[in-house]
Image (cartoon, rainbow, N blue to C red):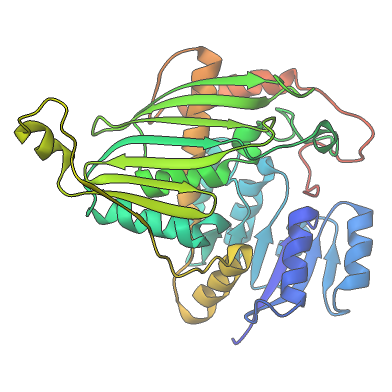
Amino acid sequence: MDQVRLGIIGIGNMGTGHCKSILEGKVPGLVIAAIADRSEARRAWAKENLPETAGIYEEGKALITAGVCDAVLIAVPHYQHPELAICALEHGLHVLCEKPAGVYTKQVREMNEAAEKSDRVFAMMFNQRTNCIYRKMHELVTGGELGAIKRVNWIVTDWYRTQSYYDSGSWRATWDGEGGGVLLNQCPHNMDLLQWICGMPEKVRAFCHNGKWHDIEVEDDVTAYLEYPNGATGVFVTSTADAPGTNRFEVTLEMGKLVCENDRLTLYKLAENERTFCKRAKGGFETPECEVTEVETDGLNEQHIGVLKAFAGKILHGTMLVAEGVEGIHGLTLSNAMHLSSWLEKDIQIPFDEELFLEELNKRRLSSRKKEGTGVVFDTEGSY
């Protein structure tokens, strides 16, 4: 095999973008063999823009079982990600899943179990892991040269969205259609990066404000407090209503501090470990010597194309993925814990009771708003 025959399930905003990247030859290892979408308009777009040889299906499962693909890319509303991934894996197809891995960890755990039973490649579209700055942060923090983490702060409020955005789909910004708001739609990348770089906290206390700034039923403003196993603490703040927004990710460690902001990574490097300095210093107001530098990176930031290339490379040549599919559960664990903490108004230990989370989510799905006029059906293979 010198090319992977790819089927794309869901060709809304994200799926269309992936189609164009492949058609433009930006991912040499992939060729579009088929697409599936329940929207007649999107299927018409595919017929006009894709090669005549590409199969066009209404149902994702019909595409999976047709035997025309080696792999699928899943880009449909969140609840359907695990179901379609499991179906594809069981039919011997490689799978690349858009973020988030799913809506609740119980269903994602089932997807991961299916992947572990399979010998197929399973990848997650965590394109922000290709960003040279985040890759460098991961290297510096996990490499140990800066010592243990003491504090984490991430203010990411540059996810601004208008009411028109939320009105653009009947599934969008509803508990039944999307499963959450800013945490589940905009922040899966941040949730993933937070755990990838800093590790998983053991306790979360969150305050999620539903429809604070928009006419929606899900959260558009979140403040969360995190506690880590080593005693480090963290604060995560996000919103879709701040203009201008901020994106500042700060990690304080024993040997200094990393600050990621405005596409720059700054290192405040101490001359010695702060814990050692604190114990030996004779003056009550002394501070460790500190050198401030802008960290050099390789400058590469391929985003979605990088993930697609790595997916093809893993299938064809056995090279590394950007993110293994089974890793998708980690960031979702964080957002589920934040939701559960806010719903129950208490601290949530990780791991948490997955059945309790699902019970609370289903309560909200039962009273979820049914928006009219957009032509998108709940719990179907709609388009992003």
